[in-house]
Image (cartoon, rainbow, N blue to C red):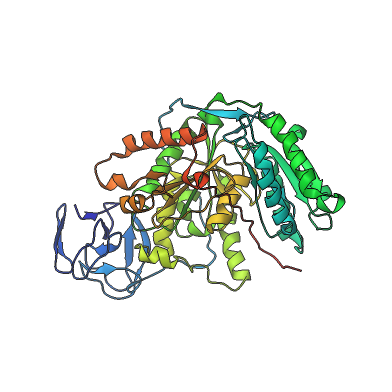
Length: 492
């Protein structure tokens, strides 16, 4: 089979392999001749589509034909444009939410004093300001010699902010730092300040409402005679406390999982994203929590999410989530629908609607039970939507700050980056998994070969639970630990 039609009303299909011009193609009762070379992952017209008509994929419009398109033509950026408008008004039209099987599963995690579970027990160093990033790295390098027991690593998270910020921009930095300081994946945290920054330690303490004092230490570099030596000694104290923690069996309902994609290709919405969506439905049905973010990549598919909101209040919050982010673009005189990226286009994604309809597959079909602001921690179970941009590092850090123990990251192009929590890479195609085995943790591309979705979802669930129980993902093995804060305001 060379073509895949996602929905029976689609007027385009996806090429599963490269198709040459002149090839005879058959898809069910449809027979066409390819009139162009069609790269794998790209779209081919199944029927004639007149100029101005909608191009349908996923059962939804993904754009408008800019010229007459014949059956067999390559459908891409040369003959399709976005059909999206500006700020929109929406009507709540709730859909019936399907019931999903409840499967009792468990993992081995670290229970914290507040009842939350972590899936790692490392020691984190969180700088309050970018000025002490190098000191944090030096402390981590020396302190790793003292790691013992269930503690595996001391990790310093660098970032450039914490000073010279104003208003809401600075508030967001403080909130993200506070979220990470109290994250259950950290067995202990050293908060490292300079002393003269806007977001200094005394200020930041006011944001630490859920802090276990046994797990947090503070150090102001300007007040220390030797901040590196003192920092190492404080880390020793934290290791002494955290190293005695042991993994215990916990129900999978205690997991919080972030959902993110990046570098999508034409297969992402067929393989990796639906697989993650299936997992999300299974975890949510069993009482767990998932968080979907990257709001600009909901544009064009937002009504799918809005109509799955559990009530009208959540619908209203989702409308604000979407339109507030569009307004952010407008306030900075930027095009709302600039996506997709060059890598997306090379992989077969033609418009933002094309990308968004594929991206939202990660949410499965469960009801939306919560809508979170940037920097807000998740408090309820079920599927949540989180305000954050599409940028991979910023969005994944936002998911971690919201409380995600792990981020499931689907990709059709590949990426080596990490986030503050284990970031599991799921490839949309087998070629990527074969070429970048040092990046990819799970291959969803086998869905285009001989694997069945439900069977692969079971294997995938097992893999996620194994990672939650201590198995390292590829970026952890490589020693990668990244974080990025959403910069939105003026720098002084």
